[in-house]
Length: 227
Length: 403
Ligand SMILES: Nc1ncnc2c1ncn2[C@@H]1O[C@H](COP(=O)(O)OP(=O)(O)OP(=O)(O)O)[C@@H](O)[C@H]1O
Ligand SMILES: [Mg+2]
Image 1 (cartoon, each protein chain N blue to C red):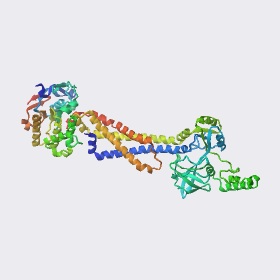
Image 2: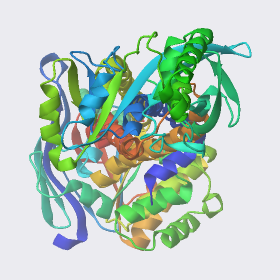
Image 3: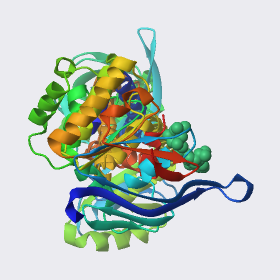
Image 4: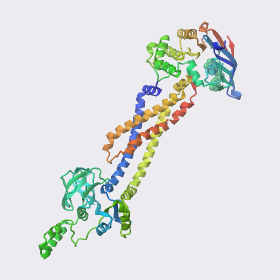
């Protein structure tokens, strides 16, 4: 079991602000995501979903608790025990609500730069393949602002896949898309998880596509429970 | 993948516009330095061209350029008699103003110690040095006179035989060189009539003596312009230029210092005096301008680099989130700053090549300027990107997750 999970969080807690303004964004959250599974994270606004994503993605750590990655303790009580930037560029992929592509790079360059950060040598070829896989190869020389929302999101997913990550974190990736495209994106995540053995955690408000997911979690007031 | 170039490519027009602006500013800084260097060069060209070891001037003056200096003509012979002195030649210097074809010519007239010094040491660009002790002159090309043209001074024509370039005083007057005897004639602008009558009178007297009849050559001597009628006071010199045996220079200098009527300056000291007196204020002014303009350029580059970085904040946060190595992002800012500096310098260089020759004052781009300017530019843009760099370091990758 040890080597089949991508990420494991144990007893994460995080508090924003102090006194009157104190918000408990994570309240003793524990969770394990196995490789090859797609997990959904539901919950009302302000329940702590993004905070959990940031903690699992080594972007801003929780105050207390532990995060294991690939069998290794990486963050303990907010203190990094490894080079987090290096972890992110080699093993993690992010997809956000808005595509968040680098505005001065073309679609293909956006994917290529991720390959480069991850130490992949044949970035240009990989980028083209990924864009083909996601059906946006025709727009590879376009800048993000010239792409539609759906195209941008697919390029962003291609970028997240660039380094064959073991964990993909997606925070409301379909919020800007219509329901057909949104369903396509979710199915894409499923394909990525099952084809490539990645663990995928997707924050979503869209209850219509839930059958795509292997596991569904729900958050409320910083606490996590199965759906 | 070079992120800096990719970003520049996306905002090419604005980047080039900024570089052009920086270039104009730099060209002003370089121009100021060039004008100053030109001024120093102009100021010292006169002393340098004379190739003297020692300058004897009127006691306690800083003459002859910084202030007037009047030496008794006997100093020349006295100096020549000092052991170790190779040559001692008289030197005069005065500003004259003449009209020619309706235009006012301001001329700094330098007397060369004929026959020892016919102007061989002058940097001639055309023509030749003086071949005759009287009636020939070497002028600076800036006067607008051509070889063979003549100018009437003190009632006598002076033919231009040689042209120099950039022989200007610190005040910008063009320099003309004549023999020292001619210079004195012109200086005192004695009515030609008086001089001629006096010469004729002497010749008359000579012819009435046995000596005169026996040695006709004396007549020529008396009619020579170098000969001075006793009735007309012998005019003073501005300086006496001494060349001495190198190993006896100190000794010669000691002897001359003991004379009560002269001050002795070495070539370098004379130049320093000239620079100190005449160019000092310009040096301060130009120095201050340079500092202000350099600071302005630095501040502008700093704000431009900061703004370029600021508006990329989100892009940079995303790259950080993706785990971009720190040096890659800092390199993005630094490389753009360097590119801006290099383009700016290229613009300044091109501007200078086109515009500086049209300046009324000479812009002299010395080796130091052409070497220091690009290095200083790169140093400035590097320092100026500090603000942008600190911003890059402060960007929080989690900002990328916020919509
Ligand atoms: N940087 C912050 N400073 C202070 N409070 C914060 C910060 N980020 C989040 N919070 C608070 O923490 C709580 C959880 O925020 P979080 O962004 O994780 O919610 P969420 O579940 O992602 O909500 P949404 O569905 O609206 O995106 C909220 O009450 C929020 O106001
Ligand atoms: Mg959120």
